[in-house]
Length: 602
Ligand SMILES: Nc1ncnc2c1ncn2[C@@H]1O[C@H](COP(=O)(O)OP(=O)(O)OP(=O)(O)O)[C@@H](O)[C@H]1O
Image (tube, rainbow, N blue to C red):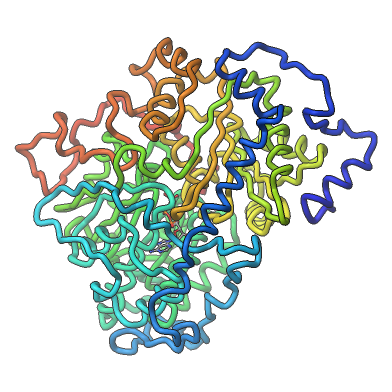
């Protein structure tokens, strides 16, 4: 089995029976169709000497990183690395490991240069965010902070922030943390990769540290968490759990994760040992609630990550069941925090059912985050997609220098398509793995680990990997099959260009993607990207609106978007701050996903 890209390439070269991949310069090939003129010129530039331009972007990716100061080395006291931990405000022990020694979640952190021999993980490039416009609405919005030191998060949490090498808050953290600490409900929209996880975890952990003396019922084998964090996928829940464990190290706050596809008994044992913050996927949580192994009656904090996805058709019934039909305290009696990079106004309407007197926060002017992502769109016929992808990967490999390896995430539409493409790449010498809903959870986790470590630097994925996953070295996202929803595109390309770093996103477009022409052209334009002339023509032709699933018709709702309460469909005479729901949601609204999606995700 190949262990690295180079091994695999060598290996494949020796297997004569295989349909070996031939790089462009070794073959005399013409495309089986004539792409529009603008596309042709770009495509030809990849096959010829201009290919350096393409690789140049990859070089820029690394160059951009290495040219930044190493924020991780700045600030805070030097004794932090050795930890020691301060405990919570009152040295709480109730939620903490219940007799077990707490594992240090920082012990396996990769050294900075393990992978790239450069200062790659230098943290957020704050220059990229300096001019970011922020909109807040709702009554009496608490003011933002500029530093973590200005916020009283508690000593133990502050130490963990230092251990994470977070020198200063990102814009969404600057606003969201004080709003949440003030006890306000929040609907927050901020770009992919801008630090939303910490923005909802810090106030929750800090709040639980303060409320440590709250008595919880003693019911045998039933857990009574104080906070519930819901996310749409197993992998994202695991990631949030890992992050929350770091943030809560030695605070006395106990975090447990529960997700489908993994043995429930192990999760039950963890819950029995005590839980303050439960991170879960909806399906597994419903199971635990129905078995009465979890009660939500002590919930003080409810956070929905990827909240628009969670309230989309696939998940909404389960979320309503969890939040409204079990024993969770109602809005006003708990604090509710909703986060996403996209928030269509229809979904805002649904979300307001769960909120009370909430603040709406939008971080980022139109297209601000995608300035970090170079977006390309190429006209590629279905029949040419595979060979074209291999050309891109080959060019990328040629331009990797000094053993620097960038990770490439390739999105496809179907699970079968993912398997087939993975196979095709592997037999042609491109080490790839895949992640999708038909793979066992073990296989999914293995694939992700293999990708993250660089053993298989190409991951072919369905939308199961589109949201939330934070894999620092993903330099290139390829939309082999474009999604049908522009919000999905935003989340997919957001797997690169994270935390202030540069990234590249390439989309293959052809006549089967007509409905995406206009939203894609609009989005690229707003992000100051070069829109090919042929795409503009397609956009002009495409019928757009009506039954279209791209909810952004009418424009203006990029990334953060606008508070739907300010729009016409919201009845201003009603409870502006109370959010009692039902505002302007079209009766036939069906979201971007069909019924029954949940089981494939959870
Ligand atoms: N204040 C900070 N300083 C430095 N790095 C940070 C800071 N806050 C978060 N990060 C890092 O930024 C990266 C992206 O954060 P996170 O995954 O929370 O983004 P996100 O906004 O939730 O993205 P998505 O919309 O894709 O879910 C993570 O690697 C995280 O560790």
